[in-house]
Length: 87
Image 1 (spheres, one colour):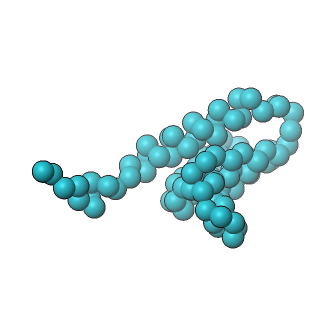
Image 2 (cartoon, rainbow, N blue to C red; image 1 turned 60 degrees about the vertical axis):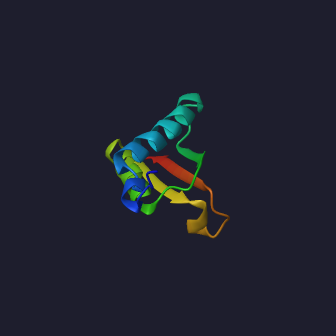
Image 3 (tube, helix red, strand yellow; image 1 turned 135 degrees about the horizontal axis):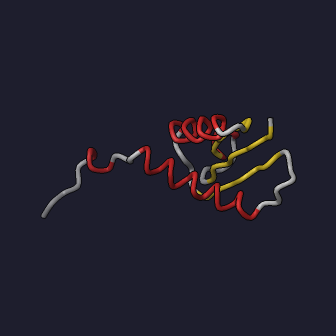
């Protein structure tokens, strides 16, 4: 019997960022296009590193962006939000 080690349970940061961005992009596709402000939410609490990478990607794309988790703002854990504003 093979026992899984903690090293084998390490997340692939790039893959998690891509998965989260894909979820946010699906919401953007169905959003009305004329707004200056968007607040998108996905189920699952992402790590601080992933939120930082997501924020960087959207800033580089021309948005004012903020990614944060529900527990970051003192709410029950389990959600991640992305706030986008047109510059």
